Image 1 (cartoon, rainbow, N blue to C red):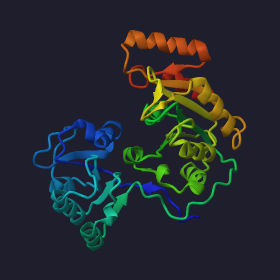
Image 2 (cartoon, rainbow, N blue to C red):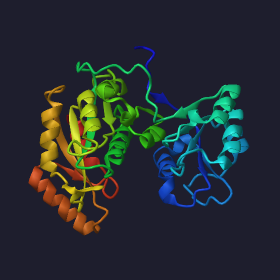
Image 3 (cartoon, one colour):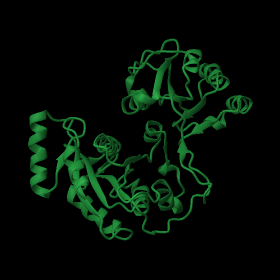
Image 4 (tube, rainbow, N blue to C red):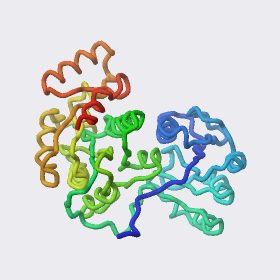
Amino acid sequence: MSELKTIQLKAPYLIFLGEETSPTYAKTGAGIAHWRKEDCLGQMNLEGGSVDIGLPKMNIAEASDQGAKTLVIGTSVVGGAIPDSWLPVLIEALEAGMDIAAGVHTKLNDNEALVEAAKNAGQKLIDVRTPPKNIPVGNGKKRTGKRLLTVGTDCALGKKYTALAIDKDLNSRGLKSTFRATGQTGILISGSGMPIDAVVADFLSGAAEVLSPDNDPDHWDIIEGQGALHHPGYAAVSMGLLMGSQPDVFVVCTELGREKVSGWPEFDLPSIGEVIQRTTDIGKRTNKDIRCIGISVNSSKFSEPEALEKMQEIEKEYGLPVVDPIRFGVEKLTEVIIGS
């Protein structure tokens, strides 16, 4: 399987924001600008677009002159098709020598005009929600290197942010660490990864193995979690990712104050303890030494004093360090990792 590769993007990037006026729908672009600012040359807004993600504003020609390699679509505004107003700009980017990458459900490679322009220009259209071909079935064999997986009590509560923060802190300390993206936004932020939710179920564990291959004994792969093992809709992807990742350690992510599964109000949110137990039970199948090293919370619904009080209560209940990556950093977790 030597030809099998995860998605790769070429830096530096020009972040394309179209006519977007709402920061809510430009979170992908904002995330790239926040986490990989060194890889971003600038942002491009079309007429009427007002979103500012803190990068220099430039057009295709200016970005090309400065060496841009990939135009990244940084909004989620696309619905059923690429807007007609975008096509001239996207084709101009291809002709200027840039690849185009997007993580939306609409495929760039389904647009005939873009496919033809990319072929003529010798550039790539990269749909990050399209997994590579020939993914193997997972074999469960132990791999060299160390691995951390973020898992959740639910979806959309900080698994990606926690993984990125841990990776950044480890690298800042001079340790060997790589963030392994499993979702479209994470892939666009990191420049590589595996769109795990687009992989056929039988190959989920194999995809996780490909994502996190053999490495140096002291190297950490920090793997972005997906879904939740207790989730009524998305547990399958979470289990496949867990089995294939073979994490040595995991961090449970949750949101303080959330009581029901988001979008499934008839289901109670599992407790942190239930998530630790289920993750450990399943994870032991491919790594008998798996263990939880801490808890990451999203405390945005509470004031800082209230959040700190609740975090201290959780620490006391579970005997594990508790962090909020946004408010208080992840140093407590990285100290445990260093000692592992």
